[in-house]
Image 1 (cartoon, rainbow, N blue to C red):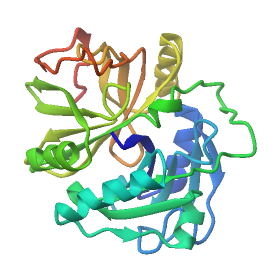
Image 2: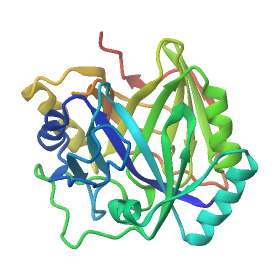
Image 3: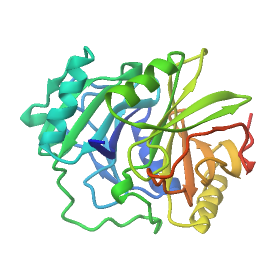
Length: 295
């Protein structure tokens, strides 16, 4: 496996300022102003990042740009070193994928030593990078939240698409992800893909109604942090997508809320750690309890 973790995501939002305030007051992310020509990148919605969001010692894990519809616009995967970028680039080109080398300006924007990018599933700009510059200042959550990142990366993203098998095949066959397992629920079938001990860093759900972002996970350090976040949804009138519950496959104790951009944010704790030498992929049909959809 040359891809180590989910490094960062770009988020499009109709009102980036409202999303930034939600990130600060409900999720507990540190919000810093973006800069013209910053991580939004040329040609992306809004033209530049209006806000950058921190959750650990990385300079940012998310950034916001203005867009008509909300969702993930960029997915960045961290690899171990330049040789890993070269190795993955070869596999991509052998699969017929056009790969572009990140410019010096783009690398400065992402604060990485090297980066390549290509169009991934759902037409999303997908980046591979190495040599991330860490922030010179300590991360301090405005709400005192401790996020679980480190070697496991940002968290995970879950995308909706009618072309789910093509997306799964691309991530497994070309990028080298494992199929952790599948969940066949009444409201959809999910395919969970991992690249490190985190159960999944990306997942796809089959959807014939629309294509785009289902949710992003922000994992916190304890069930108490999950409970406090749930209280904040009531305080700030944030609608829930699904009630508090516990997943059977990754063991996550979590709930889902609707972000100001329309897609979901999962706040969870206690996710299982995958041991590649013993892990067996299975098909789940229900959660342990809870996670009931909220109309």
